Length: 398
Image (cartoon, rainbow, N blue to C red; front, side, top):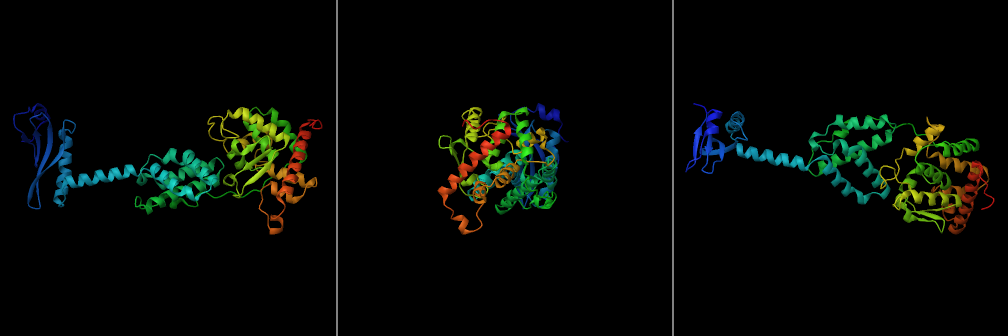
């Protein structure tokens, strides 16, 4: 007669181990120390053996019978239940060790030495802000194309299709790495390639003198974060790219020598770039230093001071000042300065070098560096004075 839960509960230990039979080979083993275990008797390949189904009462009578039936099916197939149980535990451990986040970190560390510092920073930010919050805790086997597509669509919806495309590419890279290291069989990111289309590339719009005067007039009225205002001024006065400013560190700035030496790892063209600083740029940097609180970055974020302001922050501020809807964006400051400098007769060579554009021929590439630097310094000081005049400030006393 099968056991009842009451019988199992009331079974008392004896001097010697004994067993109470249930049905179909299942029994309750009661040990002298009071421990009780569900055990399954069976014969396989001509040998009698037993399998521990579970401990009572953590494994109930009903659960033990379910496991017994699972074990009996395996036995019928010539498989020992304990061997299959061990295999499943190994597989589960493997999947736990193969969480997407752990493999992503391993992939990042493996690939990072081959990347520039700037590119590595871009990938790191995407992992931390876009990818790992959704996928990090999942096992590789549980990451689906649908989940990857949802991440891409979320990013695309906020107007960043290029970021969405890059995120898919990096997720795909992680899965390809997992396949090469025998931890995955498929790359689900491959199935959503092309789901987001890259937007039409728009060339930077240059502001006219009148528009620039209006923007400069709106800047002190903009009620946002002061570092954002100063970041806008710094972009305008130095002609650096937005990403180069965001990567900027105080260790590269010499306020006394009035030069900002940007290392190649922070530059788009992977070349060291020296930016002469006008008096106006120095004033902006001196104020930024007060706000940075002695940190490493020139333009730290408000919520996360150890990270730079977000790449959309300045464009959002410009939109609030009336320059939204694609009218003007961060990269337009370089075009504005370049256009106006050309109109006022500054040499194209000096302007191109200030923009850190790579010369197209050896003659221009061998241009005397000292003379070039002197000319750029004079040009940027003229530009700083010009910007002050548009603000309605007198620069004649400087």
